[in-house]
Each structure stands twice: as structure tokens, then as C-alpha cells.
Length: 240
Image (tube, rainbow, N blue to C red; front, side):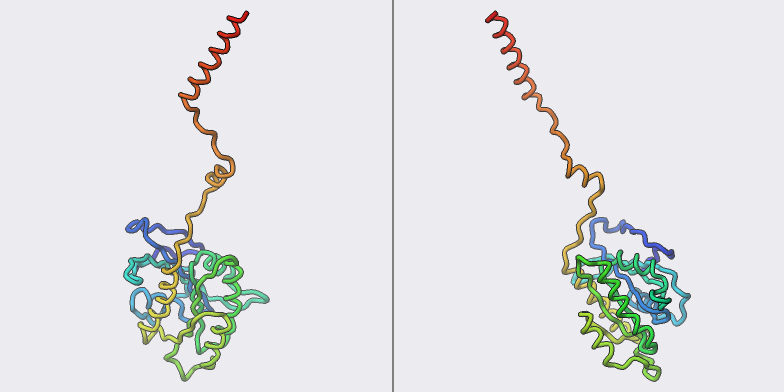
């Protein structure tokens, strides 16, 4: 796994080993302390580290096999959000991450009902920022190992997922790699079945498509026209 950057904005990162290969971009979004970083690291490295620094927006990259195809995965681990007034904290970073992503993982903690209540707003953000395309979404209920601290009823997650039209999984980043991997792999497979997005058209190319360049003159055509003009001049002189 490669740590690409740790910064407040996302920069497209070229994969030199596979310049023409498929790149899948996933944003992991959710409330503060729900275990987003633990889930990302678990998915990409199989490891679990019990203590993480507060995330400031880290982009990870790794190549994985998806249905026999080697695919470059970029995962954006976003800062935790919470309600501030009528909006969400870290709004700019969340907006940029969702706009950048091909797919989104919405995460809440089963031990924190407030993180569950954020999911509806975050899903609305996904729909608003991708109005003309269906971005695959997966809902993850993390910390399934802490049943004695559960605050979110077991049926609430599936009901919400049904309303949002996305799959949901209860996982434990600390205890179970296969469940975490399976949830992310669902997104990767769905994206793998979709056609790759078209390459962006530059302003210059777009302008040239609207105003086509004049064709280069054909030398044979110029010679023919010159001979026609010369013969016409000769005829005029002869007639005089």
C-alpha cells in the first residue's frame, strides 16, 4: 500500500506501473470516531492498528485483483463530520471527496446513534453532487464486536439501506478482515462492470470541435485552378 498524501485537497495521482489500467476511486465518509481509517487500512493491508491519529484527509493507493483483472484502487479517507448549525463540519473536504469518487462508503458506528443519524445527510450529498450518474454506495455499520455498547438497533441499518437503495454490512475492523474486504469488494466489482469514464475534453479541444480548422490547401487543386485562370486570360487576350 502506498500513502499518496496527507492534505486537505485531493490531487489526481498517476499510476506509472499501469498508465492505461483501470483506476477505481473510493471515498470513505462518516462521523468522527466511527473507524473509517481502521476500515481503510484493514481493507488494503489486512492489518488492524488500535490507535490512529485524527484523520486530516489521506489518500491511499494499492493494486488489487478484481475478477481476475489488476485494478488500481485509490481510497480517500476523509475527516470525521458532525452537525454544525444547519450543516456539517468539514463540508468542503467532504464535498470534494464525494465529487472526486467513483463510489462512496458511508460509515457509522453501532455504538454511536449520532453517527447513524448523519448517514441520510451524507447520502443526500452524494446524490446532489452526482445528479447525472448513479454512484455506487455501500453502508457499513462498524464496531460489530462491541455489542454491549450498541446504540443503533440491528434493524435500523437494513431499513435505512433499503430506503437509500444500497447494500449494508455489519463489520468489525478490529476482528474480521473478510467482512471488511467483502464490503469494499462489492463496490470494486460493481465499478469494474461499468464502462470506464470518458477522458476529460480540454478547453482547446472543445473549442476546436465547435470551430473546425480550415483544411490544408491541396496542391493539385491549386495547380488546376491556376491553369484554369491562365487559360481564361489567354482566351480573353486572343478574342481582343
